[in-house]
Image (cartoon, one colour):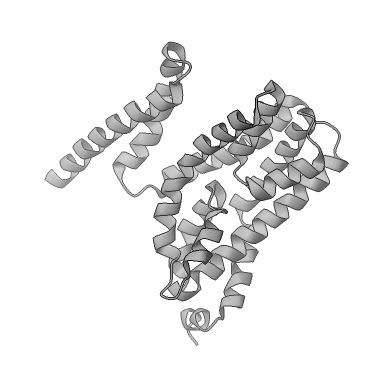
Length: 246
């Protein structure tokens, strides 16, 4: 019997388990290593293991959690920390907009999508966008839930256990572990970009960060992103036009 037919005969619960097995994939394992680094950073910041685990379950996105730790270390107020986390999480909105039309089935409830939106971060988004096309549409939310909920639960446990068992790692080691996820995300975006402008955008952004940081240190990422995006869009149009003219 054709394997494709067998897959389509799986129930939603079985697709949930298929998604859950995704925690053995490279993206999930890289994120788990990054969470080990986060646990070390949390210890250095004076956060308890309960707070670190709670942050993993509720904030989830690693950069936002590191922002919270930075705010705690700097003695920032709660409203200031909340605003910083909210602003950093705006970057996830395009991911939600791109992913949810792909996973929404004919009978998917809005409440289900709202619940799953909590788990849309770098690793879950990349994993889903690469694999969701092979899942029957009516089971895509179950597949995504299986991966994202299992991955989140696993990393809550990882943070709690490593926080209590490991000695304090050197700052360089914890920072390097936490940096694994953005490196993976950068490489994945470049590899999965469908348009020339998308690949150019990653390159122009990286090139413009150093001069933007030198001249405008308070707005370096914003300026590099806007200018890099404009240059990438124009460059992509030129390259595509030349290819079309051949």
